[in-house]
Length: 390
Image (cartoon, rainbow, N blue to C red; front, top):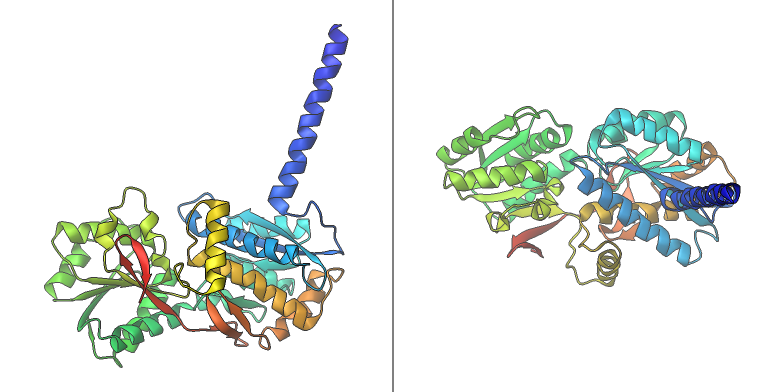
């Protein structure tokens, strides 16, 4: 009897182990139904477990919705997509590990990475493999320094340029203070371009104050300088975590200018224990507005809410578009999944400058040979704790 019981338990444990492996393969790689040579393998890389996980999670989810839609609609030229997203924790070294994991899996195209430094690190690998790389949100120009890399998001200089033009054309301010992170390529790139373009606009940058990753919790000095200079707007080309602290500290010194930022500000309303009334009236430029009335946006937002229980942000929309950009390039070049990653890259990279894509983040999006995207930003304002199109 003891032998029978032991045998039964062993078999049960084995069955449970096999079931768990099958589940992990289906969720982690999205390739349970696909086989190499018959399915396009698209990899993704981004932070899922760090303080920038809100971005990586959104990218993973937005891309998954696009993959599901395309597969349900018959795939790309009749071929299905297998999708595998790996966590890099927002770390450049770990993004390389993630890339190698995806290569072992069979990746033929890369959507990633999500944040700037990991994207730059991975770009050195994709160019060696001649693999098409599309980053949804790596905005530094260094992310696309190689001919095989393209962006869905705006470059940092373009964000700074367009932000300054918008502030000037809308007559939002006369005196502007800029507070930025000099240790971050994203932040400093936008700030530099904004300040340069301000010379052509009807406002003056009266204060330009930097902080670093080691001094990103106390902004009292920078805010006091802005207040003393009479700045009626503070431009924040930074991420939402620091923006939340700045808004709280500005309130403490009774400084109430108009605050304005770029796409890194997306996520501010989701900061835990943040009083969203402090962000009332804040403006940010973004390519995606969740409450837009077009059918594509409404369908995406509805699907995202149903599947993930929240309203999607711009990063999710960028990733959704990235998958459809791959689809457009594949259809244009007429590649097949039995080709190697290098062969597919050789065919896809040249056609990126020949395609036009209508997406969530832009209509008629096109790409320059240098990898930059051509599309127009839109402005949103925070009203009553929610984004509102302007």
